[in-house]
Figure 1 (spheres, rainbow, N blue to C red):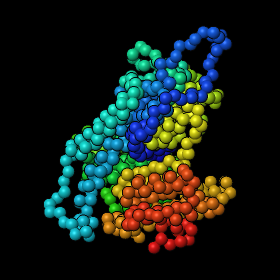
Figure 2 (cartoon, one colour):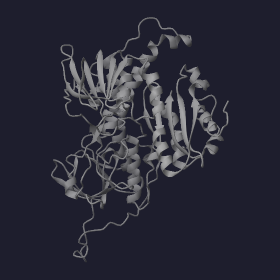
Figure 3 (cartoon, rainbow, N blue to C red):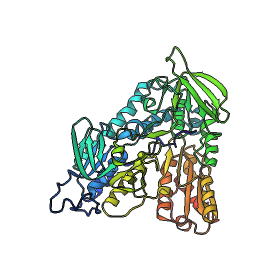
Figure 4 (cartoon, helix red, strand yellow):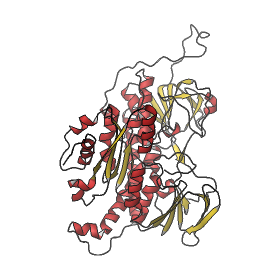
Length: 530
């Protein structure tokens, strides 16, 4: 997600998650101890039996975060309902991670088959031009989203979760009004999990056709000859991959002084060399798209007026076939009834503590009310939302848990992929100076990996950042083939405090891509893997 003075990026995402395996493999528990909850006016009601709530847990929102929380709550023996708002799967499944991966997979095949030099190196030759059916590619993405959404809905109903199609709004901390149904349901606990929506900066006019966000781009209603992408974060990079593979020319408009500003600097430099320069891509940096005006496909271009990010002086105005706005995402907190529970948002984000408990405007915990995912802004990733939901359920059941966000990986599904877990080198250096430890860096190279060379994909590195005193892994950044899959070993190492000594003595299958990590782990100890 992009950049500039706007909201923090959200990886539109982008990271995937096993939708329901955790709950399907988890055992049902006959009962669970719920943490005690303070009840106003208990003394005045002494001797009266209070009505039982309708549910142990009601979840407002049914994206990946709400779904993951629901399934885990069932495995803990809770009676659960979700207010889906007619959007089971949320952004990730319907307008984000899932359909975008389908577009990337299809366009990636086109790119590979058009790379004559790459194919010739492996003795493969294609006769005739490689073409694609735009509607077929679009249908592939839409069909995948529909199938995954059906799987998610099926997993909820199979486990006995009540699904309300209405949106939910807070009438009180644990009272949910089903919007438009004239009904209120009561719960012992409520989780807010309404996610986020694309952020469109002031001055940008969208029409969904020639100026659009990722929501419309995923429909792939047309492939413009020339498209400007505002923002060079995860979403912008992924769609530049899609569009250039399908024949478009791309111009990035980035508000920060350098492209890909939220990536590790070394990785961003490599990405520029591998993903940007060899393709039909140019860029403007340190500029704002101050005015964007839609056009008419095939008749009138869309216009983008750019001003200097510092001086605000006019820099240039360009006319393009289409403009995609990738300037981050904003939390979807409207209509939630937050004013009824004394919550004051910060740029729309609901404040929470490290246990995902919602806080009122005075910073006090609101008993029984929790908030996860993009709505709290801690880490705007689908799988982070699910992890936060699971953590919230653990805490409401009396099992203390705090999620380590440094161990949550992220990925950008370009060709080749970029993946990371933990802070960037620049952030890690600041942390080391502040906390008083020395930082070490080790590297493995895809060009020395047999499997990568067999695939003709020798470009890229795996960069491991560690503490020199304890040899604990602090962060890992990878650019290269299947980086998104390789990063999980590194996330596990950070989560469980595995050291370089332990990792370097772990046997890695030969010949596989994971030997790139083996090389980096050993290099951190001054050893050689070859």
